[in-house]
Image 1 (cartoon, rainbow, N blue to C red):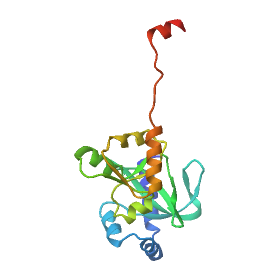
Image 2 (image 1 turned 30 degrees about the horizontal axis):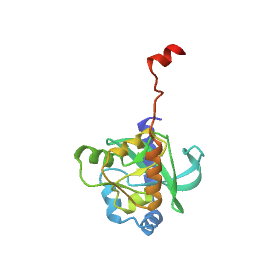
Image 3 (image 1 turned 30 degrees about the vertical axis):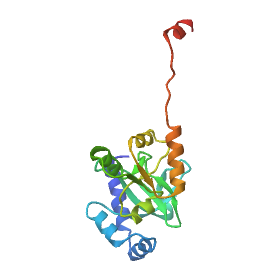
Image 4 (image 1 turned 60 degrees about the vertical axis):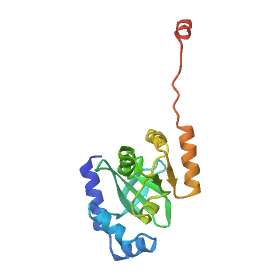
Length: 186
């Protein structure tokens, strides 16, 4: 899927936002200031009808309405994530490319240091916390291992901290280690 296709889908979802959607997102704890700040440089969110797949991918079209958020990496739109306001802890991406929401915040801490990396449990939690920090969207992505380089990571919930601990402990890739003698004997 090309970036222009993602942009068209993102803008179409943004055009679908009506006052009841704004009222609902504010009722969920997202401040108008956060929506305005996100809107100053991109689409803060949209609304799309979609069917979801067990693979973690969604297809726009039929299905219930979901909240859609763009996913950027280095300022480039790379994916879209959707979630339902009744179950914000479950989400789906459009292409499966994105491993985290707000990778740019992770990269900024990597480059310039600073305070702890803030991880949120869901895209809604990220919005409720001023759209700062990040959300891991795909715990099986190899990039999750890069989170080890941070001196401190603050997690929004104990369950998220446990998930992060487990992911970092199990994401170590060990290559097959051989000696010259072992190869010759085989």
